Amino acid sequence: MENKVAKSGSATLTVGDKSVELPVLKGSVGPDVVDIRKLYGETDVFTFDPGFTSTASCESQITFIDGDQGILLYRGYPIDQLAESCSFLEVAYLLLNGELPTASELTEFEHTITHHTMVHDQFNRFFQGFRRDAPPMAIMVAAVGALSAFYHDSTNIHDEKQREISAHRMIAKMPTIAAQAFKYSVGQPFVYPRNELSYAENFLRMCFSVPAEDYKPHPVAVKAMNHLLILQADHEQNASTSTVRQAGSSEANPFACIAAGIACLWGPLHGGANEAALNMLKEIGTVDKIPAFIEGVKNREQKLMGFGHRVYKSYDPRAKVMQKTAHEVLDAFGMHDDPLMKVAMELERIALEDQYFIDRKLYPNVDFYSGITMNALGFPADMFTVLFAVSRTVGWIAQWNEMISDPSQKISRPRQVYTGAPHRDVAPIEKRG
Image (cartoon, rainbow, N blue to C red; front, side, top):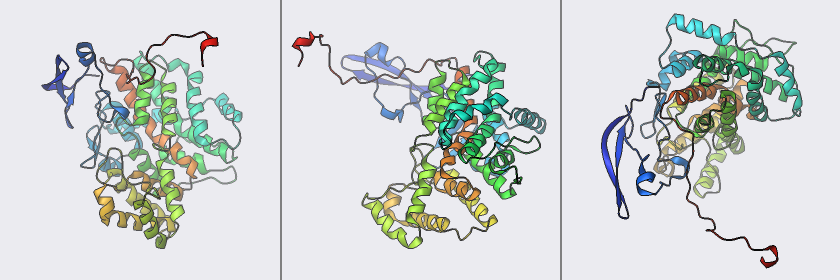
């Protein structure tokens, strides 16, 4: 990775009787950053930033977010343009390689991914070690980590070709493993991938086909799945991506790093947000109950899920695409009178007009509509985060590969403010108490 950050000035920090001049660095877009790498060495102090909300942990050329303006760019391309104009594998190629593919490059990439979708036959036995009612995400964490035992011929992170092979394998096999986790959880036999189908078609078919009846995905369902995959493919240095980078900084194999990312994504404050939003809509139930719910939110008796975002302080650009997609799916499947969608639309209208929510910048985010869409496609709530992991895998891999290629990368080692006991001596046991 070629470092492109430039110096745009300096800042002087004085601590006691010590002063240090710190470079101010400028990226291509976004706020400038103060380079504090020499702060500790020259002043003997650290910075304190819980959650790293004001700290840039790396230099990256993959994704840019302007939360105030509601902008999300993959390699410079607006997310709405990519969702409307590209397939998921086009976007995957973009995230991995930095440019959208030509027709010939896309054909070759699609062929490579398609012919890596099968998993080793012995891998199928791995699932039998789980209880029949095991949550699909529990299976995903274990199964993806276990890939390193089956494909250890591509775990040398210092070999660029092996990194590429492992990247292709994970992107290709993730839908297969996710579908297997789903099938196992509902007691149905695994469905093998078909090479003539697209990435999104293959995934839907592997999830919903049964031996007695083949499943032919509706074009609107395929489009919706394509949108879901693209919109969730990457999102800068979020919790799971930072986890992948942190695991990768120790030079762990890529399968282990992605498994770590899946484990982090599992948390309800991250990948589980769309399930929480859907559950909220179900709890409200009907439009006439919304005013009471809103009053409960204002009194802090209820939680408004699917609104607001750690980064976005205006309308989440992904939510605009997902709202349209949700309507298309409900209309295509004759569900336009779906009570959940009616509640969602009215809740959105009230929230966007109510000064309470406007003042707090509680705009709908992508989770608000993605849960409705996945529910309409036939996925149970415990599969929502699994689908998230399938799409985010390409972002994780792109970020991991960028980190490995970054000459300034070091093993992750955050510091702390220690507030425990100072030095003390161990007393004999008979004198304690």
